[in-house]
Each structure stands twice: as structure tokens, then as C-alpha cells.
Amino acid sequence: KATNLKRELFQSGAGLMYFDYSDYFQYIEDEAFGIRFYKTASEEIVPAEEVTVRKRLNLLDTNDDGMYDAWEEIPNSRPDLQTYAYLPGYLEAYSTLWVPYGFEYGEESIRAYYLGVEGPYSGYVLFYKFAEVGFDLNTVYARWVEAHVFRGTLNDYGEAYKAFALRERYDSDEKPVISLSTPDSDIGPGDSFTVGIMTENVASFADLYDVRYIQLSLWNSEGLVLESVEFGNFMEGLKDVGTFKSSDEAVTLYKAFLNGADEAEAADDVFATLTFSVPEDYEGEIIAVGLAYEGYWDTYGFYPDLPNPAFRDVNNGSVDGFILDYEPIVFIE
Image 1 (tube, rainbow, N blue to C red):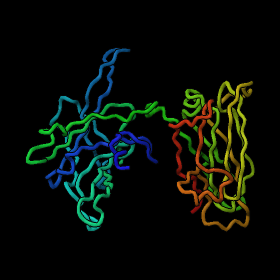
Image 2: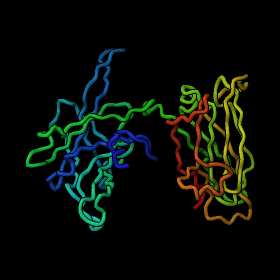
Image 3: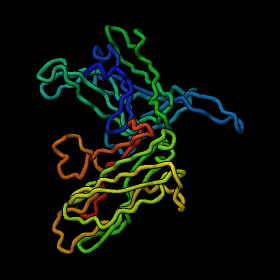
Image 4: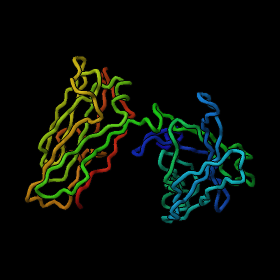
């Protein structure tokens, strides 16, 4: 629903997002308008004593490709060094007139939203990405939009400045991430290789929310042979029980964490290790493996079970907040 855009914080495939909306944006009169940002940070003044300061931010395009990709921090006392990032006051595309509607702030991107007001796509929203750098979790930022509306400015109507934050249960350096890892070597017909399902901060996050069950699926290129799956000690202080179910092009992993004697070996960050072999007569164009997520029912067919990840707590309730890296490992293409 369109009203959900006004709820400000939402999850997307790219992680946590903040939507910044004002009724006044669509009435911006400038051919190009400016936006700039501020950040609240802590600085140590003496050992074990910190003070909160505001810093000015500049967006930089370090490789001159037309897309901002880095931040420059400037002391708050130097407003003369701060610059605006300029955006179109309107767009004409797809035989439609588009006007500013809002901004989407993520950890790795900033996008402007433009609303179609005249033409075949009137009422639709067009996404205009202008930065490949974003905002840290649980850090307070602010934006200032310099633009004219109703023969005044956004500031005249109290809409130029707005503070925001991407609130999560963890900071940017504590994100619970699940990804794949494999030895860095050439793989071809007749070879075998291992794929580790690696985790970063996952066990601690799972322990915090009493997670007792994790289900993950991987897809693999047709023709690869799954030789083995090994589960180690993942959750410290609990008994790990793991199994799997496979098909020709996918494998689903199941792991439960039970009260009982913990495994003798030390817990580590490897959820599971899979070994694949490539037949001598392999004819596929690529050799690839990836964590699975399917958005449509009609793509579920070649999986041995429901493909999308599941995390459940001690009461069998769903737990969110885990981050999966769906970038596949590709050996040849």
C-alpha cells in the first residue's frame, strides 16, 4: 500500500531502509535543488570520556562516474566547506512528467523517489539512485533540502531539515551475516570443491533471541554432484543436530539447537561445509553455487523443500534480523 511508504523504516532486499517524505517535495519549483547531510558522532576527549558532536558531510564522486560513492566529514564549524548534492527538480521519461516525492536512505545507497503526475505513468513512483554510499545503523543523521516552493523555501515551511536514523538491534559492525566461502582456485570437470556456509555475529545474535532452528537452502548448477555435508559445533552451550535433503540442483539444510551436552569441539563460525564434485563429462556453461531465495511459487519446483531461509525461536516463533549474502560463487562462466 502507498501509505506504507510513510512508515519511514522498512526492510528491503538490500536491508533496512528509511523513507523520508514531505508533502511539499512535489511542489519544488527549482530546475535543480540541493540536499546535504549531517552526522552525530561521539569523540573521545579524554580516556573513557566522550562527547557528542555534529559533523557536516559531503557526498563525493571519487571515480567521476556520475554516482556519489564516498563521504567526506567536515567540522561543524566549517559550513563554508560543505556542498550540496544537486538533483533534478523534475524528470521527463516514459512520456511522463515526474516530480520529487521523497528519499530512501539505506546502508549502501541513497535514492530519490519521483512521482508521476502527468502521462501514462501518473501515480507511479520512479526510483532515482544517486549515491552508492549510505548510512551507519543506529547513528543519528539529518538532511537539509534547499529548494523553493510556493515562492518561498522549504525552510519557510519547516520542511528543509529532518533528523533520521536507521534503527536496528545491532550496529553496522555487529550485523549477523550469512555468506558462502570456497577455496580460491580454478575448478573444472573432474574436480571437487568445498563450500563453507560462513557466519559473522550470527551465533551471538541467535543466542540473544533464543533461536533453536535454522533452515537454509543452496542452489547449484545442474550437473554438479553433492558428495557430502558436514555440520560442526555452531551454537556454544547447546547440542547441535543437523541434517539435509537434496535434489539435482539444490540442497536444504536443517539445524536444531537442543538442551543437552554440547559438542566436545569448540564452536566456530562455520554453519556447514558442503563438498561438490564436477563430473568429467560436465557440459554446463557455468559452475556456480549460491544461497537461495525465491520470490515466486513457480520457482520452488527444483528445491527439495521450501527454499527460503527460516529462523525460529524456542517458542517456534519466527525471528528476523539475519542478513544473507545472496551473491553466488561462480567458478567458470
